[in-house]
Image (cartoon, rainbow, N blue to C red; front, top):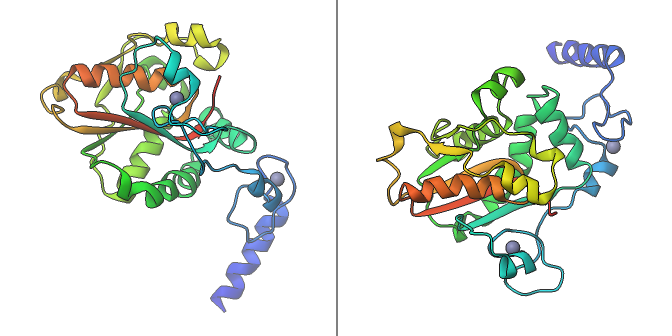
Length: 248
Ligand SMILES: [Zn+2]
Ligand SMILES: [Zn+2]
């Protein structure tokens, strides 16, 4: 009996507020637990093939490292970065909604379907992780937006796999323009020396392996600058895991 009532309310609720696909806005089934229709789900490109061993960008024609990592004079501080999916539609829309439009409830979906699935597949080939952290947001920006999407993802991820999460391991000391609007060169300059290690942890990260979680990596300079201060504080390995890997 209870179940009949539950279903009745589900259908009633659905009539008032139909569920639609976040990307193409097609109606979803009333009992769907997804945010995307099947067609859009099938468009997601998980990164499964060959990738650059340093920056995680998919490699079309083999090799160990991408052209950028082999030829760039930029100093790289992180050990490696991995991405779960390519930064294309419909992932772009989901991340945008999560990041800028207060759709916090997408956190669980993004963590379970991307970060955790990636982790289950790759955990045995990874070094031991001592601390998980997030890319910090400047306190004024966080005040304005109300939340830090990287922190939400990292905390959910760490909780699910039982790792130590330090949300305040890093501090963003420089208020920067959104990377999203800038060219590659400007992005690298914009984020330079923007972070510092929280003084409380300075003596606690020596020889530790640290995993930084973020939503998207494009130039990889944000994670690189985080890695820089962690390595200066004597961290052993620093690597990044992002939901989506873009390249400029
Ligand atoms: Zn769709
Ligand atoms: Zn690379």
